[in-house]
Image (cartoon, rainbow, N blue to C red; front, side, top):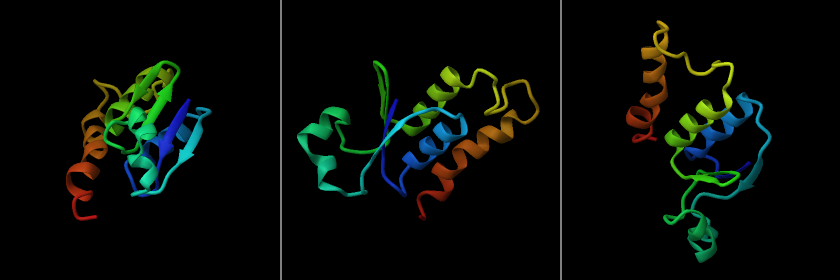
Length: 108
């Protein structure tokens, strides 16, 4: 498994989730705004030249929310994260998952 990553991007949440799930992975570190992200080679990996990108065998994904859901559905076999419905914590957990993008990220 390989993660293309840059600090201070949504890739941070994917790195955290990979670590939390104890998944072995290769980390390809980039800097935000790195010209290499606009190269034709990297645009073959992500057409918009952004991170995160997760490659897991033949699966390649580019959106952090989708990547998180994929990792949880595929590798969280013990259902540790997040609480599943109908557990009481499910609605609050879903809010915690989405509030950072909707409310906190724009001012940052």
